Length: 181
Image 1 (cartoon, rainbow, N blue to C red):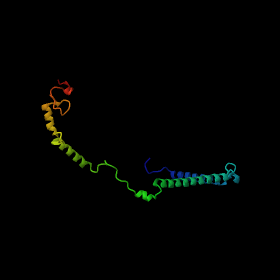
Image 2 (image 1 turned 180 degrees about the vertical axis):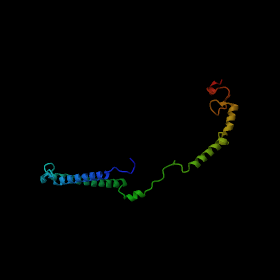
Image 3 (image 1 turned 90 degrees about the horizontal axis):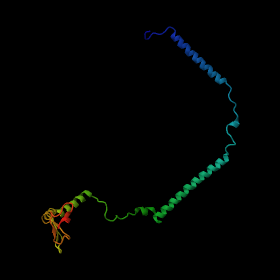
Image 4 (image 1 turned 120 degrees about the vertical axis):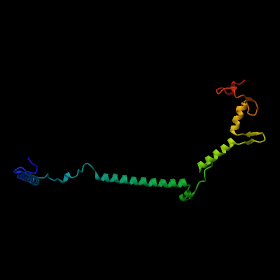
Protein backbone atom coordinates (compact mmCIF):
# COMPACT_ATOMS: atom_id res chain seq x y z
CA UNK A 1 0.00 0.00 0.00
CA UNK A 2 1.26 3.48 -0.82
CA UNK A 3 2.05 6.14 1.75
CA UNK A 4 -0.70 8.70 2.35
CA UNK A 5 -3.63 6.50 1.25
CA UNK A 6 -6.06 5.30 3.89
CA UNK A 7 -8.15 2.18 4.14
CA UNK A 8 -11.81 2.69 3.27
CA UNK A 9 -13.81 3.24 6.47
CA UNK A 10 -10.73 3.84 8.64
CA UNK A 11 -11.80 7.29 9.82
CA UNK A 12 -15.27 6.05 10.68
CA UNK A 13 -13.87 3.15 12.72
CA UNK A 14 -11.56 5.45 14.68
CA UNK A 15 -14.40 7.89 15.33
CA UNK A 16 -16.74 5.13 16.58
CA UNK A 17 -13.99 3.77 18.85
CA UNK A 18 -13.44 7.19 20.41
CA UNK A 19 -17.15 7.60 20.98
CA UNK A 20 -17.42 4.18 22.63
CA UNK A 21 -14.54 5.06 24.98
CA UNK A 22 -16.11 8.36 25.96
CA UNK A 23 -19.47 6.65 26.62
CA UNK A 24 -17.86 4.03 28.83
CA UNK A 25 -15.95 6.70 30.85
CA UNK A 26 -19.16 8.70 31.36
CA UNK A 27 -20.98 5.60 32.58
CA UNK A 28 -18.24 4.78 35.12
CA UNK A 29 -18.31 8.34 36.47
CA UNK A 30 -22.09 8.20 36.89
CA UNK A 31 -21.79 4.87 38.72
CA UNK A 32 -19.26 6.38 41.14
CA UNK A 33 -21.58 9.30 41.90
CA UNK A 34 -24.54 6.99 42.56
CA UNK A 35 -22.54 4.53 44.71
CA UNK A 36 -23.39 4.61 48.40
CA UNK A 37 -20.74 6.24 50.60
CA UNK A 38 -19.41 4.85 53.87
CA UNK A 39 -21.32 6.15 56.86
CA UNK A 40 -19.54 8.91 58.79
CA UNK A 41 -19.27 8.16 62.50
CA UNK A 42 -17.97 11.11 64.59
CA UNK A 43 -16.46 8.77 67.19
CA UNK A 44 -14.03 7.35 64.63
CA UNK A 45 -12.17 10.65 64.03
CA UNK A 46 -9.97 10.35 67.15
CA UNK A 47 -9.33 7.63 69.68
CA UNK A 48 -9.69 9.18 73.10
CA UNK A 49 -8.36 6.19 75.04
CA UNK A 50 -4.85 6.08 73.50
CA UNK A 51 -3.34 9.47 74.39
CA UNK A 52 -4.09 11.67 77.34
CA UNK A 53 -3.92 15.21 75.92
CA UNK A 54 -3.50 16.72 79.39
CA UNK A 55 -0.26 14.79 79.99
CA UNK A 56 1.05 15.62 76.52
CA UNK A 57 0.67 19.32 77.29
CA UNK A 58 2.24 18.94 80.76
CA UNK A 59 5.26 16.97 79.49
CA UNK A 60 5.75 19.32 76.50
CA UNK A 61 5.61 22.39 78.75
CA UNK A 62 8.02 20.77 81.20
CA UNK A 63 10.52 19.99 78.44
CA UNK A 64 10.25 23.54 77.12
CA UNK A 65 10.88 24.98 80.60
CA UNK A 66 13.82 22.60 81.10
CA UNK A 67 15.30 23.69 77.78
CA UNK A 68 15.08 27.38 78.76
CA UNK A 69 16.57 26.61 82.19
CA UNK A 70 19.55 24.93 80.52
CA UNK A 71 20.05 27.90 78.15
CA UNK A 72 19.93 30.40 81.02
CA UNK A 73 22.34 28.35 83.19
CA UNK A 74 24.84 27.98 80.34
CA UNK A 75 24.73 31.71 79.60
CA UNK A 76 25.32 32.48 83.29
CA UNK A 77 28.22 30.01 83.29
CA UNK A 78 29.77 31.82 80.30
CA UNK A 79 29.42 35.16 82.10
CA UNK A 80 31.21 33.63 85.11
CA UNK A 81 34.01 32.25 82.91
CA UNK A 82 34.42 35.62 81.20
CA UNK A 83 34.72 37.32 84.59
CA UNK A 84 37.08 34.64 85.92
CA UNK A 85 39.41 34.68 82.89
CA UNK A 86 39.71 38.47 82.90
CA UNK A 87 40.41 38.63 86.64
CA UNK A 88 37.40 40.82 87.27
CA UNK A 89 38.43 43.46 84.75
CA UNK A 90 36.30 44.44 81.85
CA UNK A 91 37.06 42.46 78.70
CA UNK A 92 38.09 45.57 76.77
CA UNK A 93 41.03 46.16 79.15
CA UNK A 94 42.13 42.56 78.71
CA UNK A 95 41.83 42.69 74.94
CA UNK A 96 43.79 45.95 74.76
CA UNK A 97 46.79 44.32 76.49
CA UNK A 98 49.51 43.54 73.95
CA UNK A 99 52.07 41.01 75.14
CA UNK A 100 55.75 41.86 74.69
CA UNK A 101 57.72 40.27 71.89
CA UNK A 102 58.91 36.77 72.71
CA UNK A 103 62.56 36.37 73.70
CA UNK A 104 65.24 35.70 71.09
CA UNK A 105 65.59 33.73 68.89
CA UNK A 106 62.58 34.84 66.91
CA UNK A 107 61.70 33.76 63.41
CA UNK A 108 63.87 35.34 60.80
CA UNK A 109 62.35 38.33 59.10
CA UNK A 110 64.51 38.15 55.97
CA UNK A 111 65.94 34.64 55.85
CA UNK A 112 67.55 34.83 52.39
CA UNK A 113 69.65 37.90 53.19
CA UNK A 114 70.57 36.54 56.62
CA UNK A 115 71.65 33.20 55.11
CA UNK A 116 73.74 34.99 52.46
CA UNK A 117 75.44 37.08 55.16
CA UNK A 118 76.09 33.93 57.23
CA UNK A 119 77.64 32.15 54.23
CA UNK A 120 79.81 35.20 53.45
CA UNK A 121 81.13 35.23 57.06
CA UNK A 122 81.86 31.51 56.91
CA UNK A 123 83.58 31.87 53.52
CA UNK A 124 85.72 34.69 54.90
CA UNK A 125 86.76 32.54 57.88
CA UNK A 126 87.68 29.66 55.54
CA UNK A 127 89.75 31.79 53.13
CA UNK A 128 91.56 34.39 55.31
CA UNK A 129 94.12 34.51 58.11
CA UNK A 130 92.95 35.69 61.54
CA UNK A 131 93.94 35.50 65.18
CA UNK A 132 92.11 33.06 67.42
CA UNK A 133 94.18 33.71 70.58
CA UNK A 134 96.89 36.37 70.13
CA UNK A 135 98.52 35.75 73.56
CA UNK A 136 98.84 31.99 72.95
CA UNK A 137 99.87 32.52 69.33
CA UNK A 138 96.94 30.55 67.84
CA UNK A 139 96.12 31.61 64.30
CA UNK A 140 93.37 30.60 61.88
CA UNK A 141 94.72 29.92 58.40
CA UNK A 142 92.89 29.47 55.10
CA UNK A 143 91.65 25.94 54.52
CA UNK A 144 93.60 25.51 51.28
CA UNK A 145 96.84 26.35 53.13
CA UNK A 146 95.89 23.96 55.99
CA UNK A 147 95.33 21.11 53.52
CA UNK A 148 98.70 21.82 51.87
CA UNK A 149 100.48 21.84 55.27
CA UNK A 150 98.84 18.54 56.29
CA UNK A 151 99.90 16.97 53.03
CA UNK A 152 103.46 18.27 53.52
CA UNK A 153 103.98 17.67 57.28
CA UNK A 154 101.49 14.90 58.11
CA UNK A 155 98.80 14.49 60.77
CA UNK A 156 99.63 15.85 64.25
CA UNK A 157 99.98 13.15 66.92
CA UNK A 158 98.20 13.68 70.23
CA UNK A 159 97.67 17.33 71.07
CA UNK A 160 97.59 19.78 68.20
CA UNK A 161 100.12 22.00 70.03
CA UNK A 162 102.71 19.26 70.72
CA UNK A 163 104.55 19.82 67.44
CA UNK A 164 104.81 16.04 66.80
CA UNK A 165 103.46 14.88 63.40
CA UNK A 166 102.76 11.53 61.77
CA UNK A 167 103.84 11.22 58.15
CA UNK A 168 100.84 11.19 55.76
CA UNK A 169 101.95 7.89 54.15
CA UNK A 170 102.37 6.06 57.47
CA UNK A 171 98.74 4.98 57.78
CA UNK A 172 95.92 4.09 55.44
CA UNK A 173 92.43 5.45 54.85
CA UNK A 174 91.11 2.72 57.07
CA UNK A 175 93.64 2.88 59.89
CA UNK A 176 94.50 6.57 59.76
CA UNK A 177 97.55 7.33 61.92
CA UNK A 178 97.23 4.11 63.96
CA UNK A 179 99.34 2.11 61.54
CA UNK A 180 102.28 4.49 62.07
CA UNK A 181 105.38 3.50 64.12
